[in-house]
Image (tube, rainbow, N blue to C red; front, side):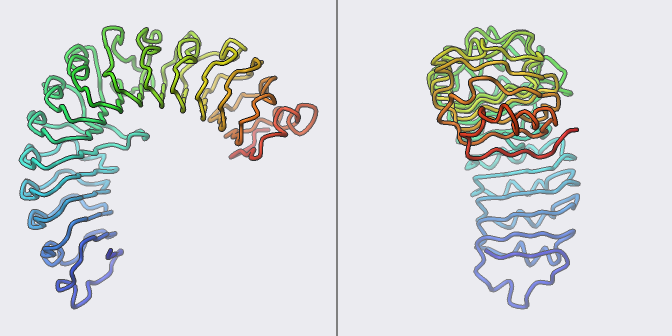
Length: 371
């Protein structure tokens, strides 16, 4: 692997080097013509605020992986269609790139179109019609729904990961009908229209997830939990972000037999979590539970036998949290407790008479303290 850093000149013998992997960190890489003459280059990673890629990028005909972290990039060159061996196009923090050229659909070997981090908060990118022709696509993240795109997705029968942004009532029915046909899908992420932290997702009751779905992320408001969710028996990861539910979601989640990671990020508006959050034997395989809530003040009790496999418990942005639950001391499997913002009242309790709740936990840490 060869690295070029900011302001660095190329070595005299650069073009003669048999470079297969190249990382460029530069405001504007010098000698683009030389760089794009590297006929053996397979992997190119570019980290730069540059606005445009030169047309010469299309000369890298053996390229298989192209990674662009370019915050000011506004467009991709049409010559990208020359990269017939490209399998992965990965765009990161390209917030000014609102649409990609239709020429990318000429690259029939494409396996992975990554336009957003699956676990991040990136906005989506608009793609032109024609995405349904990429029959070999396995991963598609960060695409905006609309303009006929939802209907085309049904043709991508090899898809295993799908992340769709700006999901609205206008095209929800067409989108859901396409997703149901994607029998190989194991990862699905749906994001409401911006600002999705306060916007409702379309009604999800008509939707039926593919049979092998293992990971599900829903970003946006929910009127209520979908009735079909408890039947997704292969689900191992579930994230509900800004669902703003009025009713506790765990009642329909705790008996998912394979669920290992659950994130409830502003999913529930309540100030108090009661013992009803998890019955004895509930969440049988859950390893990690993450809760973010600006309203949460207290978790009162965990009943005996609840969370029998829990190893990690994390509270994020819970600045009002003053009470950890009675019964936490009975979860013998727990190894790590994280409280992002540790309230001084909670700190005093845990350092004093309620230390017994956490003394069996090998790692207890926090990011900041609130006084």
